[in-house]
Image 1 (spheres, rainbow, N blue to C red):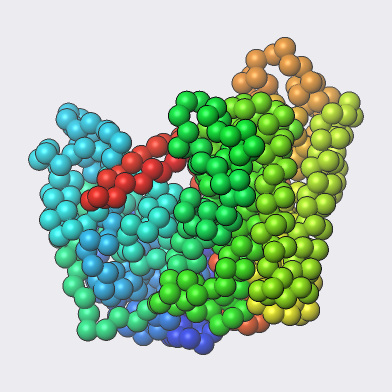
Image 2 (tube, rainbow, N blue to C red):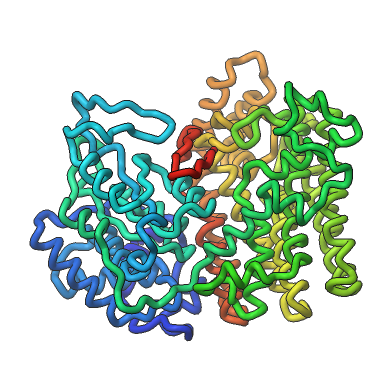
Length: 630
């Protein structure tokens, strides 16, 4: 039986509690969950009648009354509980996805209600509008439908805005996550199809962000409908007498992002030259800046741009997990504000090394775009970009080296040694990739591709973990498991990144197949050589060497050969293997806060199966606040 079939019929074990103990937590996830890849389309049907939907929803609220709310429910717990409810009501598993949304909504309702309406985001989908004859236009705020009375969007929007909600008519979990991390809202109320809501689980619910939703009754994106009375109930949800605060990584995510706000960045890493910020300079490039301060201005500008800040988040979250986990509590913002600046600078240093590697990597691969804009070497020239990368490396070391008085010379020495070792291994991995790229021999075994991945990607995760752990205290008990966890997480992440390249990447590579056209060694290439006949191997090699042919045609021919060799499925199975190894390590970790963090990182860093949307730039106006999202 296929793995997915086993997964879709997982045993039903509704949780009875998830208070501040580990009750209900899947403590041996590596044994229970064989793969995150699943065929879930058969689980996304909405119950056909309103009466049945009401009955299932009522059972979901009853089930949640028995569940503690000290931490978020895992996806496994939600699915197990949903299956139990449907089995009790003799309903088919096709309603599992819909029922999980009801469970999540019931779980978070009291905490959403406790958030003032002006701190809530109300998200509406485009597809509620009428497909034919809709007079609304799209602008930088999404769908401009406030004055149109042809569909229910205007009614919902008006009702929410009158209460003070920020309203956005747009699809896309990344947009919502950026808005909430930016600090403009603290809770989300949404209307969306089950496909969109499924993608939101990793990014929103697992982070512990209060969220309620009413699913659309179909996912065909044309003239769909929704239980409108439920939407109005959600908008008008009233606070309960008391609401248990659930563990949340939101404050830590915000803290990691806030370090790159220009003011906080200048505070944590004062500019040595005191130069102006790049945005303050008139004209293009760095003209008008003191030449000595020019490198500093460009480097700080790039450091503050883009990225998910996942590595500094890891450093802050590991430090928090090993010092009591208070940053994930209800008053996490105040707790994190009390973190020593030395810890924040260590987290900041991880990102400076990462950004430096991106600058150099873009040059070596001749990439054209980074974070939706031209790469630094396209803007300023190769020589200047190399120098900016070098500056960022020096800045990263300085952020740590000057903290000896605050944390002790032994701590600083250990962290610097880890950073230097990670830096060298990353360079070895990148060097191996470049030597292969420039060699006439394009043979590559899968094991060698994985070794390159372990060197290129894993050291940054390891350094992020180690810095947080060492700032918290001794790391003797953590060093080996951290290294192994980072290795498996990094390798799995890189394989997924290569798979993503075949979908296109709105952040960096705007077209699919960039790795092939750039001549980069990937596990996909190695698996294809391993699985194809000699004749087809020769055809594959000729496709990357013949630059006279149309690039799109070359990519599609490589895709055909990859599919013939079953490369994409084999790569996903490798991700499964490394994920299971990472989960097995996490299963044994103590304290519990660190174990939960590892589970969370596995679920979010190794998110799968999401088609990459085109780059969109949207500027929602929230009262007097405005945030540019890219």
